[in-house]
Length: 36
Length: 496
Image (cartoon, rainbow over all chains, first blue to last red; front, top):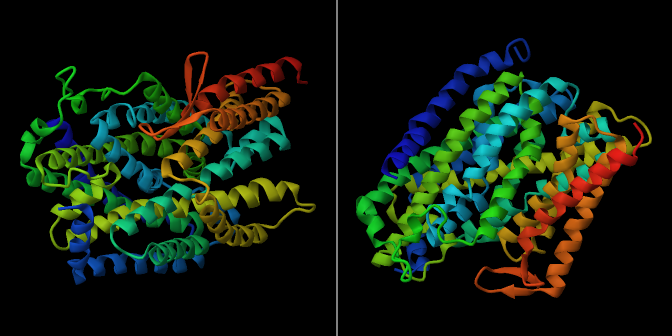
């Protein structure tokens, strides 16, 4: 229970922020050749 | 302190920083919609973001869209009353279904090509009538009734005028979705995703510290008959029928219109499969966090830190607003609001697409241009909101609406869609299957409602036939075999 909770905190905090940073770096790739 | 007391104190102490976070978030969403509206070139751009979505944005939009307030409040409510079963049996079946959908369906659907919606798939295999029946079921499911009802509950709890706050929140969603379509929806979902996840990550340790650390479990109630703390058991002492009904509910994952829209909007099949698999880790973590807060609320109520009469649906808000410091309250409210808004924008776009693209377009006497489809879908979003508000009046509780909507979707489209993906079906199989599923679902509801009685303990309707208690929640369980029967009949008698 304790381990699961701390894993959840890490996934939701640093993990979610990492996904967001990934998205920021991915934006250019997503729009490449389309809106540029 | 009673809940109204807590909330009025919290509301009075919302600082300028808290309000600044909320207002800044709302303005950013509006600006985003306005910018993206200048980039929309056609209907695929508007409804499927041009089919350009990559893995990280798919993760954000999938995770945040599937979380409505009824899921968030419902999970913490179930954890408050029953314990960790809220995670093990209310939510875990969905992760298994999503893994199966990612591995077995996503790639196959993406490779089919030329599809934009789930009814497109139905028409391709079964013809126009099945498309229309399926689109109608998708429309009922996609109406953002539960998200609107959840927001109303939250605004009432916060002591805000629910009508004004709801009109403002929905207005913001409508403005940026009407302008930017799925682009605005998906990009706004990234911000909403971060808000909802981070606010939960912050709230868990603070709430744990407030309740006195891990010893809080020792204050959870002990069952007098068995001497067991049911809150810590996998089934929570619930009857098997409810657990089966919860598990069956996970079948909706295989026909979830928002999932299909994002599968078709993905850049390639690898992007969507990766997004679904990463998303499961985030969904499971968020559900576990909400479950923990529900348990903490129960322990706090047993210890006298919260009112012993606290209602389960208030558990999450009560704990978080009681424990979070200045600034983080705004983050938490923004996070909960974000979870609701990401669902309202996505499902209002989907429901409008159901009416305009799936139903009106093929029935229209002449072909509709891309521009006409975009304009009609934009107008349709306003109509969807009006219908959703009117429809929400027909349900007393959020759960009632969810049971009806998800049951209707599964009963009508699950069997035909699975048949279309895995078999070589005959056209009659789809129409017979969806029609028989729909008919059984309606008849079951009518029989239970008019022959049965209301159970105050479980807050639901049941009808006892030959010693067997039939609960309203079992409607989809009855409809699915009939839908299978219809499919089999269609395969036998239909033309190739």
